[in-house]
Length: 158
Image 1 (cartoon, helix red, strand yellow):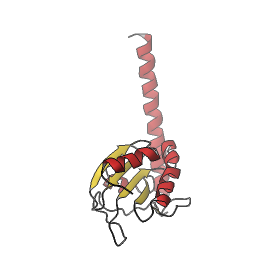
Image 2: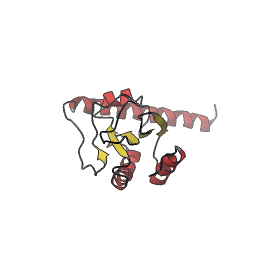
Image 3: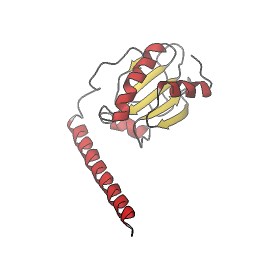
């Protein structure tokens, strides 16, 4: 085996090991916070607070008189890309209040909801149409323009 390949393998093992430690620590903290509803921090108008009793994927209906499209973001307050998305989601919630529901779910405090949506990677954004049907799913950071472009591609205009 050449030197570069050995270094690559060792680096990959270190990343996997660190990831396992981080995941275990998150599970430990989640268990310790099991009775704590919601998350810390203010939530902007138009952005629903994280919750544990989420609807089944695609089954959620907005509470307004007229059904609205819904963007569900599943992430964590400890995830760097999730932290980068927080102000974008708050801005979308404010700008499109009454036309779009933006829902943020913290997977560390809402494990059952994360499992319900089949989350593998955070952040994950799920785009639901006004009928509650999942139309698109994206894993990783997504900027505001990409989110708006995806809505437009899906035929939703604001």
